[in-house]
Image 1 (cartoon, rainbow, N blue to C red):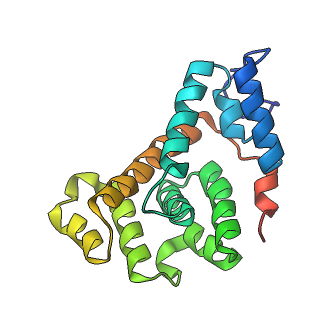
Image 2 (tube, rainbow, N blue to C red):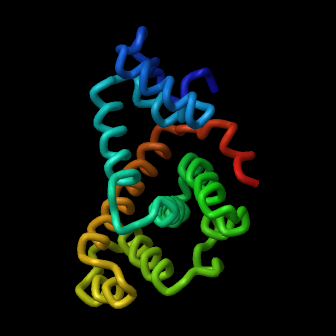
Length: 188
């Protein structure tokens, strides 16, 4: 594979606009890398900004869901979709945020084997059902989330995270997007 983060010949805008370069510099400083997903979108700055804006809203904005819970959803959805990029990147995030490399691996392989509380299990059951058969979701599924303490706003956020990763998983698979090598060794 070339230096491009996907199998598509879509080199980044060169030079990057100042705001984009600043964003990449912040990623390098905070993460120690520029995630390949950002590099992949850098061929079209408007698409990159739309992707980053939605990611930041879904994964980092105020929510009744913790950052770890959102990463857990990302991994459970990505496991169903067998997305190599997201399983690698977000599996590393679960390991780091939880401090538990076993939990990270369990979620990557089969979240049902993980020692989850009732709230987490219901959340991941819903995200997986949404991924596998969203047309079968009914009020009983939303009520199951309410029963374990999720608000209607939380249910929206669960659905938003699951929906976002269903989209990104498909983009990553379609373009053969590869995770940064650094993710493989993180938080082990």
